[in-house]
Image (cartoon, rainbow, N blue to C red; front, top):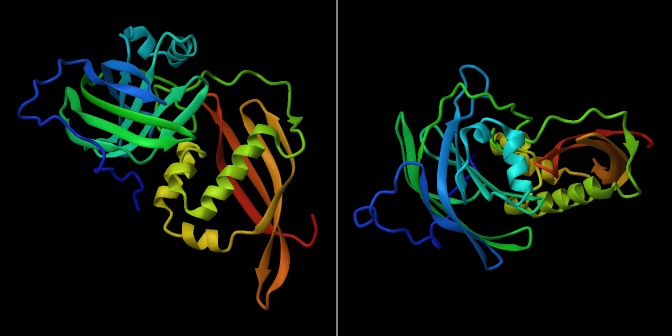
Length: 299
């Protein structure tokens, strides 16, 4: 089941027959967050070569408010520096090789925001370029977000090597800098700190079947697993209740939470379930990457 379905009711597109084609490497549109608009004028694209050999590649489209030097496009750290310094607004669109929507991501300050549901229309992919229109009109993490962009981007050389994480919002252009060396893990505060808040929000979204929120709280790798897992609803039905965070630690960009909850066995007998939750930082934001539950007599 592919959750990256399109939204069609809200997006008014300029008819292709009446609209002049966008120049190569250009975009026409804007990113609007809570009424504040930023024009998006430039478009770049490349294939994600981080996938295993023989696997289908995704096509990454980067829409920006200003021109980006090729050296910056080939250097994830440089892109992050430009964005964090307020010099660049980035909207990343991930498509399949055939042009089907996968993921849309952008940043508001240091907050990473992504969506699996967005509109993608008139997408045409050739050997040299990709063009089309993408957009979204939704409340994401409490922010009213409207994106409407028409673009035509040249597809860059696939030989450009950008280190891929575990994957960051399914992109190579938004990859964070390499993890700094850490002296060791240290304990999180009571309740798990920021990673704990993210996991509790994830747990609530999972139980409510709130996919719009859920996919903003997980890593891209976890999102891929959720999209292909046809047993998610069954797992949620048997998910432990009254969950709580017992302890946690963080080591660089990886946090681990020890959690517990109760589950009902045959005959309505309550049993304790313990879990280990792994969270990773993707582009500066904690995201749930994995969790494992098992039954225990005590914790």
